[in-house]
Amino acid sequence: MIYRLVAALTAVVVVMNLAFAQEAGKDRRSPEERIAEFKRFYKKDRVKVRRAAVEDFKGVDNLEAAELLVACFSDKDHEVREIAQEALGTIRDKKAIEWLLRRARLTNDGELKARLALSFAGMSHKSIAPTLLGLVRHKVPYVRRNAVVALGKQGDAKSSEALIAALKDEKD
Image 1 (spheres, rainbow, N blue to C red):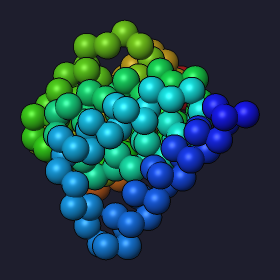
Image 2: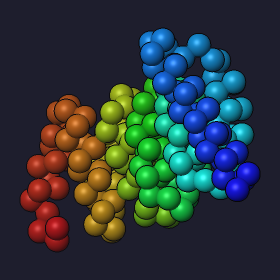
Image 3: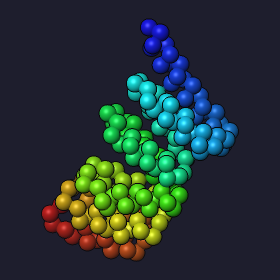
């Protein structure tokens, strides 16, 4: 009983932190503080606490944040994975994006490639389009699909050409 009460109160604290940060217009905690808080709350067993921790982590924009969000892709809760993917799409730090692009190119994990592809949709970096072009030719259909979606959201000329080529591909 006490465990459930503590878990519920922890979830409330995380959600309140998020609400206050949104209400204030800008989160005043430093990235280091937010990373430490994320690590503390993400360890909890309660899925609502983990969801709130990942939701609150949106907007932390550095390499460590990218690494932690990618680690959330292995969470057993689908919604935690979705929130992490969405949060990853807000990353703008050049080093973090380069690390994510390298991960997308080098990993053998199809689900990770697919999630990273969708995360790239909202990012801007010179190497995103070439990486997505490589993923459009991947053997796993949902990786190709997500890469095409992300290319469509990029909106540049190279991306348009790749989309046309992908649409003409008869195996999909």
